[in-house]
Amino acid sequence: MSARKKIRVGVVGFGWMGQAHTRSILRIPTLFPEREFDAELVMISDNMASRVDQAVADFGFGHGSVDWNDLIANDDIDVVVICAPNMLHEPIAIAAAEAGKHVFCEKPVGGTPEQTVRIEAATRAAGVITGVGYNYRWAPLVQYAKQLIDAGELGEITNYRGRFFSMYGADPMGLLSWRFMLDEAGHGVSSDILSHSVDLAHMLIGGIEKVVGMGHIQIPERPLPKPGGTHYDVGKPGDPTGTVENEDYFGAMCVFENGARGVFESSRSIMGPQSQCAFEVYGTKGSLMWNLETMNELKLFRASEPELGYKTVYSGDRFPYHGHFVPGDANPIGYEDLKVIEEFEYLSSIAKGRQHTPGFAEAIDYVSVQDAMLRSWKSEKWETVERLSPRD
View 1 (cartoon, helix red, strand yellow):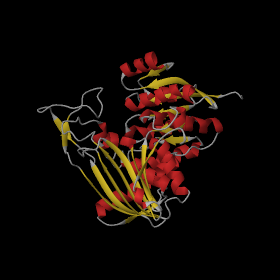
View 2 (view 1 turned 180 degrees about the horizontal axis):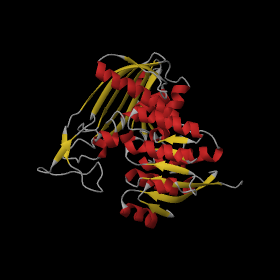
View 3 (view 1 turned 90 degrees about the vertical axis):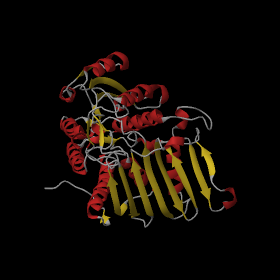
View 4 (view 1 turned 60 degrees about the horizontal axis):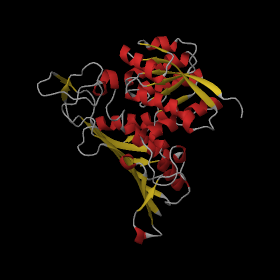
């Protein structure tokens, strides 16, 4: 076996997502013995000293700092994984790229489309390898769905329905965390969870030509946050409140470049669906459905066997990546397993010296659609999707 490439990692932001990325990196050696790299957790940065201490003591980072600039200045780091609040992504990502470090950034790469464009331009100019956290692409049955579509098993694709419904903001007592603020999160669900739905559509179906959409703030006031909390924390009646500044809901219709028609919806304040990142694909020979809440199941209909209706296909080791975690069929894998796959694929791209997919180019694909959706919300008309690029 040839020597593995050593990749030295720094992580910015050690909340839930930063910890998920770190656990995933630590698990790679036990799950992917065929890897071409070994990752070392060199440094952590978080604005809470207690989280820095936890990262060093419990997760094995070499050291840490409450100032992310210290991490960027560390010459012993090859790649920076960014899990900070959305509106901090731009200065961190650009500084990392200018320092010659590869950059993986949780979605959305920028809190606004304009930020994403500037980040992508800076990293491309620096020649670093980028990655973005569209982790649902890596679900084994999502990979299988793409295989079916690409092989023509569904025929000509005619319709697509994508949605991401989550209850994380459904409780009016949910705290006014950074996710609800323009200066920290940027836009609301259109920057946050809707990006997953449109990215999956890009992966499965292709580019989008035009859209018409609208947004809405369903819960306009929320209790003020407490230090160290998350967007799952709640307050109580009588607590001081503040104003929600970005949208709770966004819905849109679209026309794909291949002529298929699509519908997208996303809400963080809907009641019932708890983490329903789902899509439905309809073609002239069949259709399929997938839902994160039941991520180890795919519903498949074939026009050649109409009497069978929808057949449930269970995930198993015959599908991509699944066998790295559990053998056989219908033995389920979970959310963080997708993050492990994501980390493995991104670090493998660095080891091979190739640009990763999805990278910041795919983030531009999404924000170009988001920009058209936001323009449509304002104009109340259909808007053409124009690929965004830096303005002179």
